[in-house]
Length: 279
Length: 255
Image (cartoon, each protein chain N blue to C red):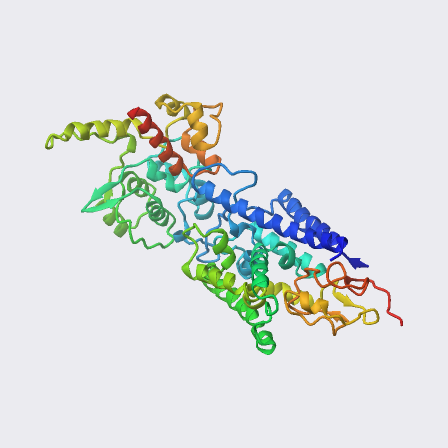
């Protein structure tokens, strides 16, 4: 990887680590607050307050009854709108750059890549894998429906993100801890398994890939069909045979682009208002 | 135009960071618990959703029960601040009472029953069958009880007893009484209640260094403020701080 490309890769990693550390500090401060101690460096809101998915699950009750579901805060509702705006323009940047659980899965995945250098992220048969990718939409619909009906955060029962950053809390359920364990183990074999198969927020944001303002574009003329983009994509998207890639699984990580993997300049990139290609 | 990693970073800073900043200025980024309880009907809120962390002010806002009513009914100090006094603080003020073999703590559920009777919003309690005498007297005076309710509650009252007024047991028992008496005296000397002022806490033996170590905060200039009001205004748990202070005082006494 050239110096410029490694800088691009490093920048994303820095941003991911920043948000991961931020959530760790906030969780630690929330624990301190529960012990009657003052917070350190950053505030001590609950994780519910800073998770945009909280806004998603409460949207129905907000618009029909004017209230938030218990434990959901105004901040998570606002964050939801901000993340949706970011996603509309740039795609699921939240997934690829911000979500701490996505970052943790990636870090565990690096161990998996060393353990299984050839097979990593290729264990599941492609046809079965493609079908399994739609489970997260079922999860999304079920979570929204049941939350609206029961007016409680049912998703907490399987949320591995909450379990990871609140594992000391009484609020974390055994089922969520089990889900967390499963996802971390699966991350050794599959990249971002939670994101691919089960994450309801990822499902919602993934839909925006179909009409995002800035899609992924591939220049057929300059492309040399090296398949580097297909190999590096954490979400196993077939990029090399399309001109405009609007796959619902894209997480806007930019790993496939000529910023990182693609060896030919101006061949694979996120762009808009581009010039019409001529041979 | 190509989008690079730098553009994505800028987008995150502007949209997420900038958005949070603007939302905070517009009071659209509250990260504390939503005070709004669940609705029972379009016009009334569910009493079951009153929480220990609910303040008197919140109860007044959502259930139209004046703070003064609860202050009087539960014999709280007249200068109790409705905006900061939380229902769970009642446990720090009153003793647990034993009635017919069951222990009753003066806590949130009693207030829920009181609010239900006052506002005529239905609520079925599974733990409160007795109310403070002052609360029942208030409800009767304000004509909030039906004949049936009056007949029941008049026979199901108890007297509120402050924790500060806890009596020392004096009967002799097997020569262990001296130790027991000493323990009770020590317990009384180190017992902290929410009504105590900062000045009283200092007089008990908690100096500025100990105060900072326990709470993470400096002693305020106004030492006449109650310890509970001060702690809760800083969004700390009073019960946790109280325990630490009492532990400090009792270890200090032993030295």
